Length: 174
Image (cartoon, rainbow, N blue to C red; front, side, top):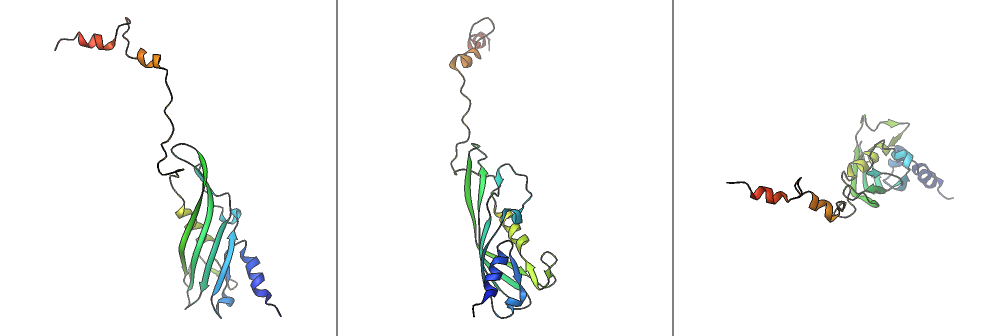
């Protein structure tokens, strides 16, 4: 008889990183899934970095004592605007070796109905990994200065009477 518990658990995890503590009593769990954009909902009003795609996770969850220990990998593709040249680009943010520990009585990650939801922890760590000043490439030269016609720059050095400013300065006695 096939084990439907694992299939049901995987379907449950597609919308959040929800862990049923009863499944941890026997052995550790290997979990793979994604958190939707709605689940991530960072609420960050940042014009330079957006989260238009779901986050993916590959984690191993175990309960060696009363604590829950999670370690694995988080990944998300973000949409950015370069702070130097204003070019739009996408970048993958990967958190290798992600670790999380939930202790009994943890107020941030409470246990409800024998389940613990780690979505908030994943969200926080992804937000901390986002670039504060995204660059399309490390040596981005930035925006090009506006081109001014040659005659405008020469006009700046013309005196009011049509003579050169340098000519007027040369007349000064030191």
